[in-house]
Image 1 (cartoon, helix red, strand yellow):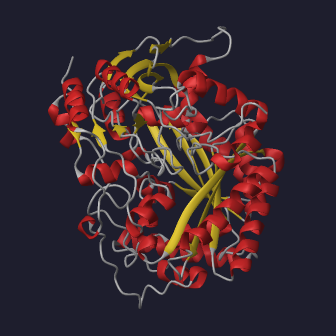
Image 2 (cartoon, rainbow, N blue to C red; image 1 turned 90 degrees about the vertical axis):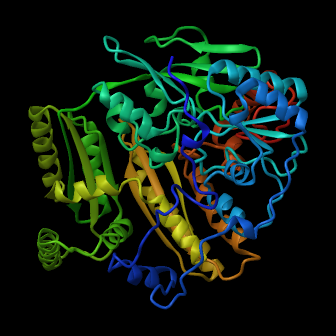
Image 3 (spheres, helix red, strand yellow; image 1 turned 180 degrees about the vertical axis):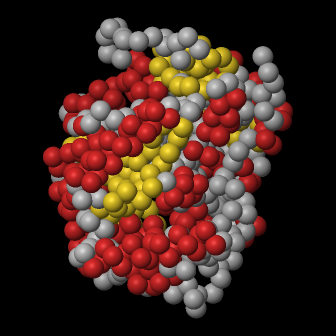
Length: 573
């Protein structure tokens, strides 16, 4: 068995934002970005002063509540190098990456942080920590990669007991690959890049690439029912995770990686999406695929949203199997074009001239190239013959719906930048702008209606608040019966004392529209605390009773990430 990583080698976010130190969104290299920011949200980047980088020394970090005797016991369980009560590490592990998390860690007084961060190196050490938690009536919050945007790792501010944040980042190994079955055993602390690197070296891929890929873990994906950009081909995480091991208060739960399960209610499914309420996922057996011979991402343009949606539906019902199909609505298409960097090479300049010529032609044909036309990407993977055949079939579908094949140029740019978007949110917060997302699963029959209703609800709320705002959307994660609608919005705030309240009104209105329109509470962003107010509406009261009963029976002392998914629920009703 190889030695687990050292704590210092574990990936972690900077304390005040997303991802790595020194990586920033740079607007100056994107000539169209400042103009759209000024038009849509009133942000004048040309004249705004450059904000300062947040400094932790400007904040008062509360002292840890963990007694020295407990630190000694944890040290005995996992080793002295793997237990920390340091300020910065505690701050990092006390906030996920939801917008309220990031706003509070920057702007508000820090009150309740986790008290100690523990990095176990194996399943036995996880068990030892959990035993200490139960014996001493502590609180345990599994951290994953800390990239959640639903409050899944944020401690309850009213919690008086010592809180342990459990980071499995040292447990990152691909233990074994069963090449005959196409299954890989992987430790739950493996971050996306580490996991794919290990698999790729053996000729395999898991194919799971969420936006948070660089700073999220396999265990976190399983615990929050994650979905990746390439779910059309490889499936959502519940399709990919075929078996798992979870350290539970009564021992280690083992879900066997077998096809088909007729064993009563699915214990496997109970573990998936449990967000630490039932235990700590320590290992997953995942479905893997041979690295494709060819991978091509092709761009397409449609006259409007309706034509694009019909084309996406046609592709989903066809015999082709793309890795992903993504369609941006008009506002998102405009935003995406504004994110294109200034061309510096002769080839890039020629491409820009070609785009200008194409747009002029489309305007002459009656297209709205400002905020009407819609950009789409489709990813093809497989042998050369398979990719060529599927590209030709999709091209026919696109043509029938009046679309235009742009080739692989735009797709290559998309593929290179696909994990960079979260840095934009940090940038906007620097200028007192909230940028956030909401997503939902919706049937094909209701997709256009839900898209229109959410946009209208957003406009109504911003009109009532008498403030500017920008919302756009893309469709992704196509299924036989429907797809995911992923909305992004930006709203500036002028007053710090009402900033979060104003933002929350907008977010709540969008989430309520999902419920009112019959779509899902969330497609892949978990429940945590951010989506908790709508959970009973989403799964019905009998469903909430069943979930609450499961949590109470497993964790009667409320030691395991209490308050997530369901808060106080009256089970006697």
